[in-house]
Length: 394
Image 1: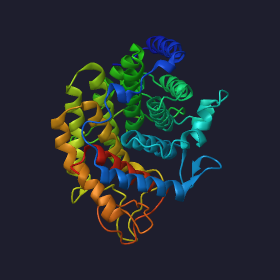
Image 2 (image 1 turned 120 degrees about the vertical axis):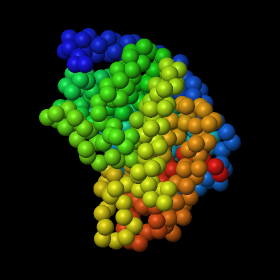
Image 3 (image 1 turned 120 degrees about the horizontal axis):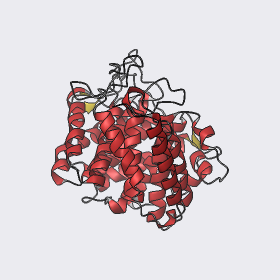
């Protein structure tokens, strides 16, 4: 159903008012891990040790303390990597990377009251929401350590409010991929579902939940999920139908974590069943020998090579499966996916990791010259290790 411009405008103004009022009292916000417990079972210490080793290598090889960025990274992949480090520290109870957030480019922006977030995100509505996830994960870590998280919470809310303004009635709803308003796609709206639902879990403000319900309904009726249960890239700008473009792995993970957060917020377990349609389809269709394989992955030299964005996709899938299981809080669902997570961490360790402890882009087979090694591929492998440490069979 198309939304009137008047309704959308009123809705946005209401959300902005509510979230800005809440931001004034963020010191009292509990980390979401206290709402959705971080530990569902004993940790797999050996896998966590591997993850810590990989994280140290990643920082030593790629992190530039001068500018707070990763050499060879990008704004959105750096945001994911910062989120990964804090996800790891929350899982292990360690503080190995406790100074990274405030030193990072994103952290410097968060701690600067003069930051213009519109300028930082430069119209990229998907990149913006990866930054929100990083800011709020850092805030969770700081809260867990008894540190002030005000700047990180408030900055995340400020960016969130920018995204709210990118929703309109074109194609029945949805947030635009960029401020150019040329494309509505899966990942941007899956992230809006996740930031809205997790925002509600953190702040208990109805406006976040209203948005989560709105975007979930729109997504599930958008036609972007195909007959195989996988989410294509987005909508055709002329017809508002599924454009049939690539079913990237990360699209399949973020929808699951978003639906699980909404299930935790509402108590509606049917969202978990919807998520598992896609999780199961990923395992059935986007793997080789039971290991995640992106369409651009090729172990042999001369084949396709994943580009600078695609190199982190598989790890994002495993991270968001972890987040799915965090919020599902269901032993039977954990048991269902535990062996698969175990297979991923094993493949990353045995096939993806080189003699320098860097992790390459290909997991499904030994590298024959086709794997590339970047901060994004190392972060991707790190994500697989942390997810398996929490929920794998180790």
